[in-house]
Image (cartoon, rainbow over the protein chains, first blue to last red):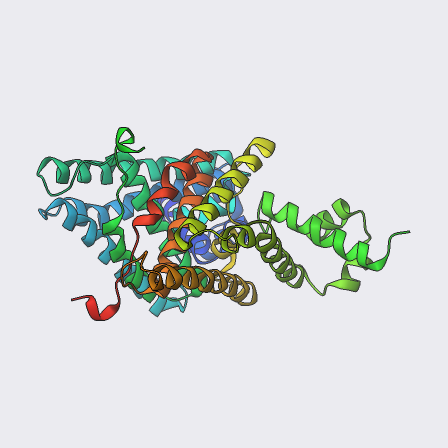
Length: 203
Length: 203
């Protein structure tokens, strides 16, 4: 017999797969329970609501993204600017592989939920916001290191990190809208050109 | 008594306002009819489904965006690269004004629906795709003109136009995720740095 924690894990993974493949609103608790092969009672034993579950789902996305992509790209022994390229390459490979398996570009789970829910679900918006802020810090530290080693001119590393995330999220959005992962390959290399100068250098 | 076309228009505008403020899935036909003050029978006289209505809504968004922003920015007598800046400035003003009125960054209606629906509603995905393609053509023509007049080096204007849309959509996504329109002001000026070279110049 499955342990409680198996059940918890199955609910989490079912919700995650279903929401990523369609949308938050499109996936009900009944469908999550059916896919996880658990009764509704078990669901409400672990989660008070689909919203609470989704916040846990976002946490697991971040942990997996960290283990499967961020740690490899950013703790890789590569030079700082090469780490960013490694990050983009890994994302292109992942989105292409998902496209081959499903016929769809599924995009970024954080960006998806941000645009679907930001105006009407403040706890989920805040959770997505936190993820973008953590990613921004990681990229900022990388840019700081590149600047310290002389590989990068003087820039506003915080604002540039944010600009890099914006460009990345937008490229993923277009790839999803056109349902074509090759758009990522076409667009992401140009991220290397994006710089925001320290504000005292802007006239 | 209101004419048929008044009713049609009211349904369209109600759907548009409601979907833009939350999401496609969150807005049912009943809510659209209630806001438009029409009976359900009238709705189904004009539209076979919420999907069909949403495709009409996307058409009206494009017409309005064209009349209120694109025509002013791109047929403005400005030099080509200044037209792009005028476009960004007008969008920043519009998103800031919506934020002041509603307390929310509502973002780009096309980007919102792309991320919510692209994997599960092919007609809506295709309509959004068409809008991005039209916008890309408009920006490409502008970049071609700048290149012809010597204001821009030799670039792949089609791919660069797409990169500019990606950066724009991503900046709007982050502004929505953080619920802070000032992010657009911080990020959009850096769009001027994004160039994609003709592929024969890429090694």
